[in-house]
Length: 330
Image (cartoon, rainbow, N blue to C red):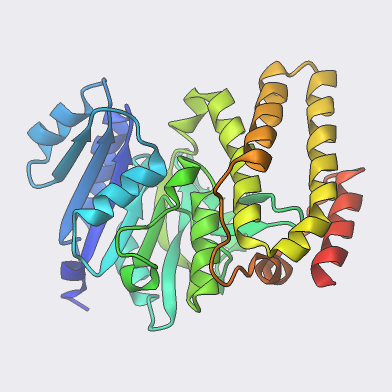
């Protein structure tokens, strides 16, 4: 498909990631087909990222914001700045390998809303960072295959959600052309919400093992451990509240609250104050945030039933997850 690149806009959010961003942009410009547009949305960096883009990559469209609006909002800002039919979502800590975009394009059939990549560890490309997203019965999500040999994930497969850092997205699969992510989430788990929205609207999300990109896992988020952990705790609860029907959520909520209490107590017992504070604050914000609203046709219970992968979290998490599955099946 030699002209497919003309229909693609690559979107890269950036916050103080100048050196990583340079490597990422070089790898994108080398793709065949090349994206018609490459858009960098800078979230108020103070490390010279904007000057670097202007001097080294003059063809790149730069949207320089004066503050950190978050990963989700940055992607939406870029989506509003292009009319390309397909959006290529790229983290600044990714280095696209030869043939990456072509492999994503080849997997984008008429029923597919998003194609996610084989994200490899930048320090050992034989190991995976992500093969798309997975979820368990309690709503905890993670990257499939993280830390495992990439050779274990060589089959194209349907997944619940794509990794928001290396995905080709069909714009017409979205409710609104400029709403890639739910910006209420700011950062983390916005791709879980995206996957649920796509499946609910009748689109597939697929993992393409031939689309390889190197990835420096959580290169930006790891600099802010409390904010990262709090966002993950809060956003898991917000996504559950948004996508699981009220009748099922009411049954699940006692189990969810119990697990959050046990999680906080465990962090306190192990003298992990950052985790304790993040779990307490994130739980409060996730459970009591107003105006979350239900996603139209909310089908999160069915999606969790379909895609849930049991993880042995030991006692009592495994037992609580088993109860959660019975409630979801009921």
